[in-house]
Every structure is written in C-alpha cells, then in structure tokens.
Length: 270
Image (cartoon, rainbow, N blue to C red; front, side, top):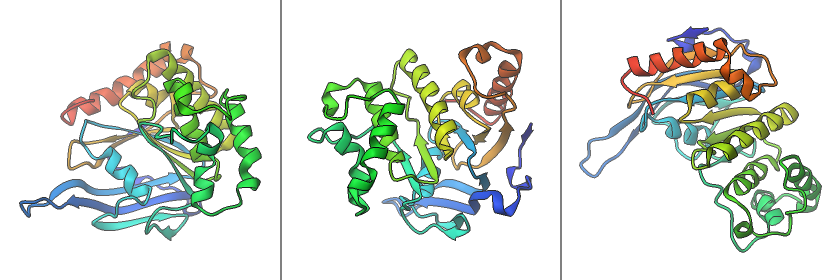
C-alpha cells in the first residue's frame, strides 16, 4: 500500500508511540535568511513498528531523526512520545549513529555501559544485560577488548548494543551500515532482524538503500527534496523472518520499484 498523505492514515490513539504534528525546522544563517530544512511533518509511528525513511541527499532525514532524539528543537509543531511532549534527549530513546563513536581507552563492555553511567543508573544492575546483548550479536568473549581490536562491523554492533543497554522504547538509527562493505552489511541486517524480533523496540531507521529499507521494515517512508516532507508511506507486506532469498521475489522487486519511481518523480534519489 502507498499513500502520498501519511497524516490521513488512521491509527488507534493508544498504539501511537511517536506522534508528530506540523513539525518544521528552519536553520539560521549568517546572512539572516533562514534555510528551511523541513516543511510541516505529520507522522505517527506505532509501538514496536520498524519504520525506515528514504529520500534524496540533504532532504532532512537526519534532521528529523535528531528532532526525535531531542538533539534539535523543531521550529514549529509538536513532537510527542507516548503522549508526552519531547523537550530534549530522553532515556526512552536510544540512538545509533553513522559511526559507532566508541571511546578508544575503554573496553568494549565499558563502552556499552557508558550511557548507564551518564544517566547515573546502577551499573551493576545492567552489567549482565550488556553481556547478554553482546552475546546476542556475536561478541561474546570480546568484553575486555578495545575498539581498535575490532573490525568496523563489530564496532557497529557494539554501537547498537550500547543504545539498547538502557532498554529504551525507541531505537533511532541514522544510516548505521552505510560505511560497511556489502557482506558485512548483509550480516548486520540479519543481526538487526534478530534484535528487533527479540527486543521488540520501535525502530526508526534512515538508509540510502531502498532494498535495505524494504528488507528490514514494516513501513517505508519517502521524503521529498529539501525542504523535506513525507510524500509516500509504503506498507511492507512481506512475511518475517526475511532472508536474502526474499530479495529475489516479485513482491520485493515490485515494492522497491514503486518506491524508486516515487523518488524519481519527486526529483531525485540517493
């Protein structure tokens, strides 16, 4: 299914974890002329949904994610999590960035536990959870290693685990696999499916890859060129758990083609 007006989709009020109404963002400039990054955004994301966002480079995808992370404040409009207005970074939101940004002088386990210390929680209560999550992504036995001893894909797994350790409701992911080679990216896509199935977080995932978005998601949102707005909302009706064999099916090809055609019609594609 696709619609060019996602705000018109009716969703039960108690099913909405993220709700955005009329959110815009304009950046100030030295000349005094603001740059409009986002046109009004209206969007609901249900609990435990996996939603991906694709769009042309510079259209405001990462800007929207930073608003959801509480790192940027929208110029106008409302953003709520579980009905509560978002006014800054929330302990209910975990963020995975394009680069894992691990501290080189800390062991892997201590890197993972860093947000627990920052949030002034009891580290001992989360140590076992950290070990279990590292084991789930294939890093059992690497707790005492340092980032320089791990490959890029392994470091990105650590970044995902670090975001999950505080047990947030929402996981925001900003092109987390874009810098990795194709084989590592495929493996991490599989790992992320496992994480989502076991942890049941609400995931908001930004990617440059349309096939990756379809492969991972329940919904794929399409954003226009800057100033960004949501111009398409596609439901992914492919059964889970997905494998690479699904990529070769007619249904997968048809959906990726629809998304690609919409992006081309709106003026560009990554």
